[in-house]
Image 1 (tube, rainbow, N blue to C red):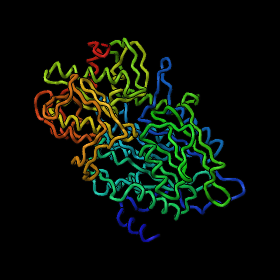
Image 2: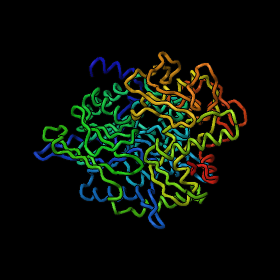
Image 3: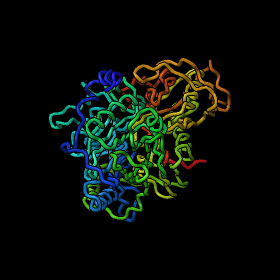
Length: 545
């Protein structure tokens, strides 16, 4: 190992650089023949426990049951030559909502469905932390075959310390070696550092070394232990995956997640193949990796295919039955009203999000007349579904608004409000920017101008060091925002506590609906987002033009 790599290894510490986990006893590297040797990686990402999919008559599409059946079919053709992997964000959606409110058990049960479906390895995504590290630990303890990976998390001595008497290899590992098609495949997991500001990490940290440095060390370790292919299971987002491939040598492929991207064709940076499979089991990726006679990745004989889930017609009966049993434990579906206009959630900034933000703001203003605007984060709108005109159910609303976010009223100076709108013009995890949906406020982004800059401590912004110049036309109530005036806006506690890096919102006066001060992490008692939207359905507020 080069001196610089040795220094980095010491910097990383035992939480990331402990012994490489193995799924089978070490075997000598396969003897190469003139024909390439193959390993097939079936891949999903950001699946968010969307086990069912749309309804089909009295039942459901059974998306994860189709994936389980497809893996079994391919294993029959290629015994020992197929791995099923996930790029992170597996724990979200309706199956996190048990009738008894036990989220840790809900998380554990969902992961057991993935395990039963044949998933072998998965990156730890930011949504895995939505219930906090203690709940995540309970969920991990329910696994005995599927391996969770994250090389850049530093959880030693925290609520998520990977050591556990019942799991000699640890609750999760930085990387793993697997036998696949007579090949030794090394897999590295990565978690997006933005988890610090978009989820509930508690005392869990990220390593001080950069993600690229961590990945480089893990890749070298895996090669030294006989890996013929090195694959990253990344929950960083497509743009960051491309940069990672540029910064790290020796990566054959990156199976990504976090940005919910679909890559019908491989994205290539240098010699590294980069793929993503959409989100919520919309597609199943098939990355067929070949190794040539010299023992190296053979792109000429490797293939990538992205298949819509509906093309997989067979369903595994045991997985279907397991999901059916789990469905009995979650909050039951019930009609709550009628939808007079379709809700199209395929665009998170589309008509539904604007209607919902308006209804949210009007609901708040009816209770607190001083409210002059509202803002919701684009990432709070989920589902990616087109809901047709007709009956609305409670679970449809919960699918769109799955987080336990509650309304917070923030009184800001005009300058703080301008800083907030400016921050929404900073590209986020998907590189898209414009991360707010507004009611009563306006603002556009000019991405050719300078972005807002911050000073960070432990990955969190603590001070604006240079105001940005991207915001154009900031107004409220049709009037230009006065930097010296005061404005009260309605938002959710996720943003009010600085989620997604919205530091300016933490600098205002934050109140709950009952007038008490909002002091994170203690939530407000009233104004849960899903409940507000259910009331908006019942009163017809969402149908207003």
